[in-house]
Every structure is written in structure tokens, then in C-alpha cells.
Image 1 (cartoon, rainbow, N blue to C red):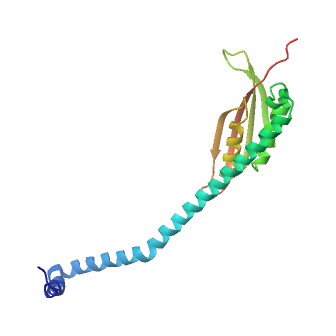
Image 2 (image 1 turned 60 degrees about the vertical axis):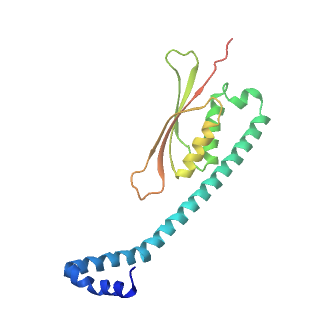
Image 3 (image 1 turned 90 degrees about the horizontal axis):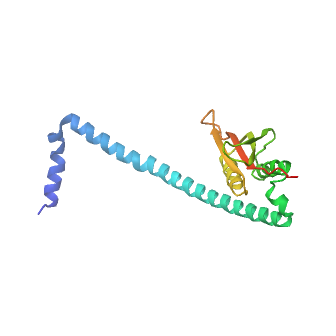
Length: 184
């Protein structure tokens, strides 16, 4: 059984056993522990709080997307059947994509539109190319909204950030939508 006196004796004789370099190392280790407790623990708590805030923000974003999707479904139900799918009118398809961008706070002003036929397929497709800039949340909102559009396919979604310190992303979006030609 170890007594208090034995422990005290071991602590008093520790400097003699360790030597100067050992004592310097022991002091540095103790200083590192104190520094970790006083400096790094608050940083870890701050990171945990930031993670919780980000989770809450993503939850709010998901709720907003759900509300937008419900509103869009209600609007589609009011439209005539040919217009809801937008397969007859290419202009309405482009207008819907631009409106979705505006709902998600992205400006899809300029774009390139062309009609092409995929090899081996008879249905022509309208290909839409857009370039814009926006936050990650806005891009996520737009991509979620575009995937819920019937017949619309996201072919390419390129995100770029020239500088890590910038909060806005450069976005290149290529979409395709099947179109039908009116038969005589």
C-alpha cells in the first residue's frame, strides 16, 4: 500500500531522477495541457456550436424547399395539361427554369438554347446552358427544384470558386428537356 509519505518522497526525488532536460520536458508537457484546456476547449465548443447552427440552417432550408415545391405543385394543378409539362412550348420551359432560379435567388439572365436529337433516340431535346453566381444554399435550392421538374434533366452542374475566401460560387448548368414536334 502506498502512503502519502511515499508519494511525497517520489515527487521530491523526481527532479533528481529526471535531470534538467527531463524537467524541461515535464514543464513543457504541463504547459501544453494547460494551453489545451484554456485555448482549445473553447475553440472546440465554438466549432460544435457552428455545426449545430449549420444543421439548423439546413433544416430551415429544407422546410423552405418543401414550401416552394408545394406552391409549385398547386400552380401546376391550375394550369392546362399541355402547359404543366411544358413539352409543347419551349418558351414556357425556359421561363419555368428562369422562374425557378429567381425563386432560389439566382439570376439566370443569359443562356444558350439549342434543340438536338440524341444518337439512337427519336425524341428531340431542348438543351439549355446557363452561367450564374450565387451562394451554396441558392445553388442547392435550384438543383433540388430542377430535379423535381418533370422531364427536365440536369446534364452538367459545375461549381467553381476562384478564391477560397469568396462566399459565392460560379455555376455552370446544362439542362435538357424532351420536346415534341406537332404532327400534321
